[in-house]
Image (cartoon, rainbow, N blue to C red; front, side):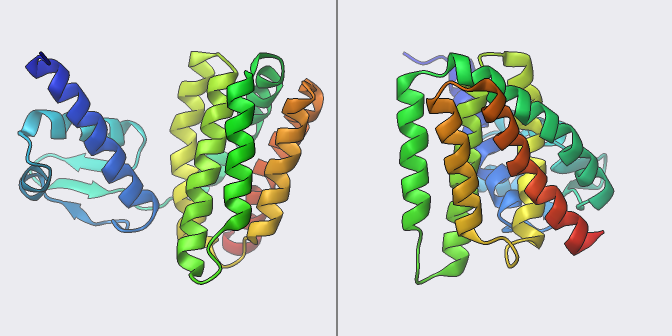
Length: 220
């Protein structure tokens, strides 16, 4: 039998993921007010699991809570995101380096499956294809973070990833060709499969640098 605390923990994770994805994919735009009453009604929960989920979103700097004024989706700060990318590039390189010697066969298999899924895409709906690529890229990075087997590194990278993914989705969707991203992921996968730490680090950093360069050209 599941205890009330365990049920609340499961609920707050589900709520957190749902709201996080709505923010990343633009369903909840910057500045949007998130009504606690409405969200409790939608998810059919008490305030406790909702507030736990909101706190995790605050930690990711995706929402801001102002006493007596409520919870709002945090505006995108371009300078902050650029700084996040500059940290992310080195940490992603380290994750690739560690994963190259620690990754398991099942994780390699899943990475290969993600690349094939990205290549199939959705030819009829560009928005759906773009959102799908963000989801695939997010999962691809998450597997490598796990494969690095360094929980402190994984925590930092998970925090940075969704803040950066929100900027990609909101600002770069019309300038980022799917084929180029897929080629970058393939290069990372090949290095991991060869168990080549130096190459894995280089290709992970190259993948992140691509987005830094696009941000500079597009927004700065």
